[in-house]
Image (tube, rainbow, N blue to C red; front, top):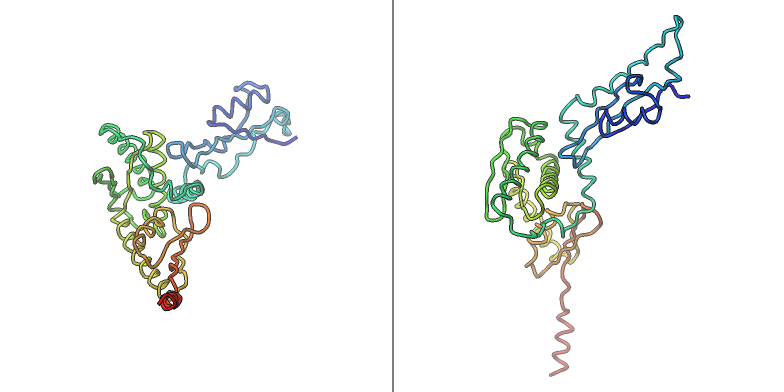
Length: 287
């Protein structure tokens, strides 16, 4: 028989109760080490982790040492550090897991359609919920950062400034994007749908929007001149929407997302033109 057994639960207490039931021993006689205290994640949405205990079975407990006294199980080195360590590593793991949940999102859900007009009181509650969540994240990434709520018609923007902006934005805006996703998810769960709360860091969203429009127009011009499609690298639904709208009124090209999942490529294709020679031939025949 193994020298130990592992039991999981939402909490240490639940794991202990489960062990007692399966081994038919009382809590007072149960010999165990706590491997992990578990974690509820941020607002219970992602990065949840069960508590884990390592139990010495009653049969192993009675195996005596030379003097007839049972030796306690050797302590495992390191498991207690699950709740410690580098905060940035923790949040990076959280963001990685968050992006794993994005694969079911499409352009249709990139801009949620409000089911009903929220009341001012409900809106304040939603903004407060978003601020509370963001403060938890900022405390891990850049505690010096500050938040300011800006209102623009039915859109509310939480503007983050100060601190380590590069870390908060992340590579190609991925950390900022993950924070936006968590805000949407949390607000929808706690306050209902219909709120548009945008998270921005040092005006990055406007810079990114202008950059995408410039790239889209340049590639559209290339596609028009060469008659061949141009492809933009994989982008999230929000960025693809910016490109779609930027080229919506361009009669020389059309846009199309390619692939599956949250990140897709976007193709800018020249529109087919009518053959002027054929048209001219038909005109001469008619004459």
